Length: 393
View 1 (cartoon, helix red, strand yellow):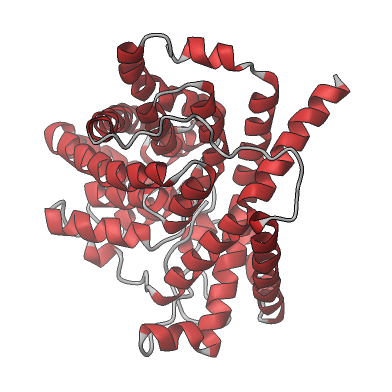
View 2: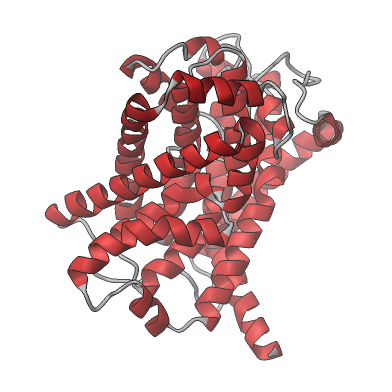
């Protein structure tokens, strides 16, 4: 028993070591983008569900942090401030599926084809959501969602979503390199880590346990690997269900996706699994609080169909273009940690993380964290910039 637990923990640790530098790089780039893109006007930029507005919502989402909880909280905040409901949902999807850190992690752990699939399928999924909303979203449903949203019940990462420390003066480069900009970057970086470490840690532990304890022949049977045509249909249908039950969201689901891929799930199944972090059980419960039971059930149905259809389309398109990897060898685990490029990259990026953490500690960061954890989602005044906006959970 102890040996089995030890094996799973070792798998989790080596997986964490494999992706550490990519996580730090992703969160650092995300923090830079958040520091220079103002969220103050977000709600005003999303007045309707026109193609232009949906494109703006996707851009804003991609420029925000990747935390699913914060994305969901910010989407409700924007909706309450007058943003169009469909546009707010498009923002929410972009925030968890079109962010830089997710693409970097996928490339490192699973290969560039999965990054390309994520950034091809993500916009396609948003288009499908918008089309289904146009067909089935009635004024009555929106009114029910608005009435419940106005009650302001708390979800998770409310304060994270309410936080905007972005710098507005000067060029992009001046914003990044100014005193205020460097402080905002360090604060976004640490806030992202504090909001996501449980998801990432949980994802690594679950992935380590599944990699160590579940034999590949179980996955191969479950994902119908012996029936290639059926598997192409089954993967996108079952991928979101595996995600719902695994509880892991945001970038924490990438290690688990690697385990599923090595186990035999179809390419489209991996993509559907990655898309489904916005319908995991904890998030479904937050939709219930935010918008009411009926609307949350409606969202689950629409989102599930959109994820499965987009993933199936990616499977067919990438298959036709011969872009689906033939080898199932996602870089889950090295037998031991060695002096190789991963180790050097990890040491370099750990040094960067240390510099950002020191600046965070020296510029009122811990006080900000305490305010956030006790603020219950009120809009926050940051000590170093005036704001009102969002982050990720």
